[in-house]
Image (tube, rainbow, N blue to C red):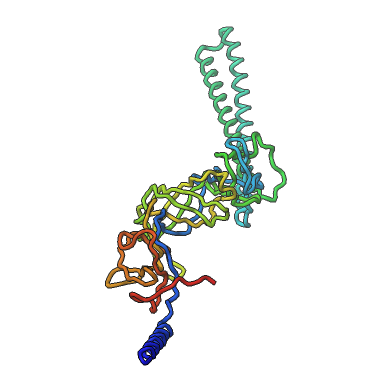
Length: 403
């Protein structure tokens, strides 16, 4: 009977002791678990870019004159060699100040006086020529009768030739002074003058579109005075777009011509594909919004997506570009949040039978959310994401129940 009592007491003590152990044992640490997977992976450099029309045409004024109101507006379609994109008329004369007007009026008076002198010289030359012709006719008649010598006849012919030359010279001098008077009178013509001579030819110069496309920019729709070489409008093909991106020089060295790029946040639902065509060999300095000088490199990308799948995208539109600097089809990877520093390297906590196991790993390519694993864990393993200070080697862990 006594032995049976002692056995009962032993069982009771063991039960109490086990209950105390279970009651005092800490609960498992709730953690977020992530799986190590094999999947495609890309490492990208992200930057803002801007679309540009490749090879736009800028139409400039071929001469100084006054443009009429623009026959085209921004967004109009034009055909090469057919659509009139600008019309230039002769410029109106400028106003004369008091001194210039007095000088011009004096020049007109001077030209009128010279014209009257030329008219008088022409009248005298007419008289001399008439007299020389009469004398020549008389001497020819007398020479036929043998009354006048041959020498006298030759002298009469010489005087007639001289009179004709003098008459021609006087006539030319009169025309010269008439032209001079017209030139001096033209200096008095101002923009207020309403009497204008009828043009002998076309009054305007019509400029036709040098390229088929869309009008991207019109300098001014209104009529205005332009100088030779002044820009009038720009024309481009909206289906032939490229993307211009400015990268930090430290990022640009990682991008090679031919690299693929993904373009999003441009306004459409589809991600546009592009390819790097050119990386400029020289950088330029740009001051950031924080006042820091940065060395940047300009890249140009060709758009691979057809125009019908990027409707609405135009010139100088803002886009967001992700340039691919490395990619792999089957890459062992885990979340970046599972990594932490350990003895100069990287490590993760693996979940093994409800326990946290410290596991050093070797990593390769990295991106903001995931990292390539070269060694240390296998595909399918569960690792702790965002491990806190409660997760230690051998600690009991349990997957956090989503709320």
